[in-house]
Length: 291
Ligand SMILES: Cc1cc2nc3c(=O)[nH]c(=O)nc-3n(C[C@H](O)[C@H](O)[C@H](O)COP(=O)(O)OP(=O)(O)OC[C@H]3O[C@@H](n4cnc5c(N)ncnc54)[C@H](O)[C@@H]3O)c2cc1C
Image (cartoon, rainbow, N blue to C red):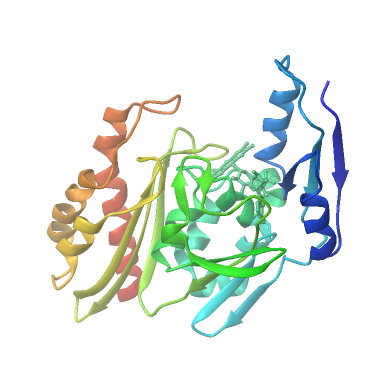
């Protein structure tokens, strides 16, 4: 049986020292809602070779759980739980797409422990916070023993379960642009709660006299990573936003996606519903701007 160690360091110095020790494999733990089931599954397997001890490094004692409102930008600590963000007045007022995504994520018990940083670092193509954060022009701040760096969320994911973060780098926060447009998030799941998305989508729309001046559209659970829909966006800029223009632009989403069959839905079904989910997100974002 593999050996397990648990640590809850209170400083980054100690965290990086523990993470870089020789002869152990380390993994960061936030709320544990993705990681714990994975470790449990691993413990139930008969190992084919002896694995080094697994050092679990809890990030919750590092003070990464605050939200800072700097006017145009809102910085969210990676260890903020989904519940705390759902109740946060700044998130609700300034980042409606993210707020809507949070209302659709899991159920109360999971939201009370799951963190925004864990949702991002898990790098699932179905992660619900990601399309919302993507259309809101988010940047991620990563920290390691050699300092901090910022990476645009648009360049963050490389494949399912993988990000550009190097081993030992911690996501400390995300900086999200409030923008002057309207934003929205829509999700299609197999149930109303406690379920991952079959397809999800988010949109950010800036309007002048009903004409689209700027738009960002992202769709999730329909490609190896969450993707921006460039053709849909191009088809809307400079056009009056209405049912017809939204429907025509949303049908172009198929150019951005490459859905697969999995336990939640077939590739065919995902391809059929993605334009509708995208259209709903664009329509709600535009409505929010008008209203
Ligand atoms: C019943 C159930 C329902 C769910 N429903 C949804 C849903 O509707 N939508 C959805 O998107 N997800 C859902 N999830 C998945 C999960 O709850 C979320 O992805 C959650 O946000 C993960 O956060 P966490 O803090 O629990 O991450 P953890 O499990 O602690 O970590 C996840 C991964 O990220 C790494 N990590 C965590 N934080 C950091 C950090 N700051 N820096 C570097 N690495 C880090 C960990 O090492 C691990 O690899 C559900 C899960 C369950 C069990």
